[in-house]
Length: 110
Image (cartoon, rainbow, N blue to C red; front, top):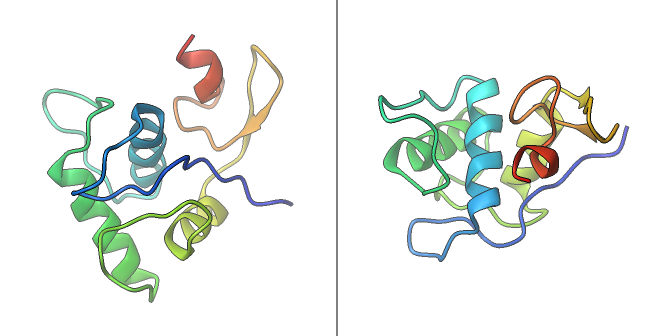
């Protein structure tokens, strides 16, 4: 099965973030136990728990611990490979279940 990538731009604490990159990353980290949803919920804004989750994921998977995720880089690739796959009930696309097992990111954000 092909790896599904989602990052459009590098995601890091000193980089401008794409909102869909942030949401997709938080949901994928959460599905693997690396992101605890804050009291205020999951937002499209980068936050400390997301970057801490990236670093923990990197450490646990033998990756360079720098808190960065680059498009098609080792952290994104490893996280994508571990993410569950579902079929969107709206468009029929295969995705990683980043919003729910039923709706893909593209349909959710419409």
